[in-house]
Amino acid sequence: MTDLQDFCQEPRSMAELEDGGFERVKVYAAVKRGDLKNVNATDAWGRKQRGKGLFVSTITPIPYNATLLVHAWSTPHQPRGDIMFKKMEDEIDAEVLRFMPADMTGIRVLGHHDLRQLIRKTLTAGTVLGWAHGELFQRKRMQAKIDQLDYEMKCALERLKEAEMELLAVQK
View 1 (cartoon, one colour):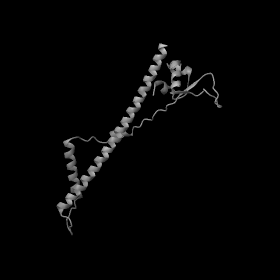
View 2 (spheres, helix red, strand yellow):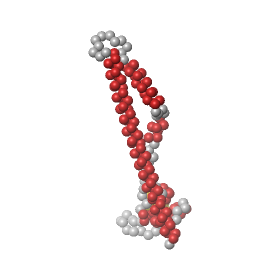
View 3 (cartoon, rainbow, N blue to C red):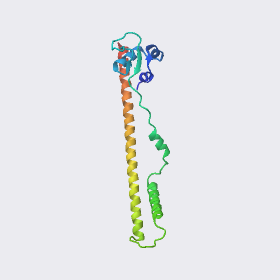
View 4 (cartoon, rainbow, N blue to C red):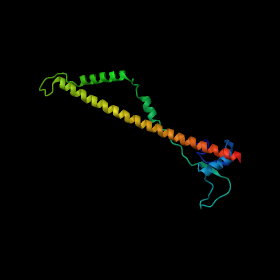
């Protein structure tokens, strides 16, 4: 979004635009490109009107979505590398001991070692699921970042086109 489009988010007259530091040529070039619209150009019956224009931007700004940023701030920092692997192993072992029954009385179909191994496999599978979910979140976050960069690139190209139009107008 150019400065002119940002300034014209609410309808502005040519006098207001000139007071804002925008040249007439720049405004008319933006209307010709379709970045701005003169809402007073036609009357209710579609007839062209001459006189004072009222210019408004044709582009509505994209609302800022801070949910990813808030989520990133609210998650505790997790260490990386071997420390993370060791910490994860310790947490899994602690969960295994927590799930083990205190007394092993009664009929046992599974032995103590077998039950411990089963619980460990279950928690490992849960950890893998958590990791997969984290990777999915990372992919979505990166896609949002790519979309934002794409939007910024479009804005930069629009500014470049506008600058070229101004250069051509000045050269004539």
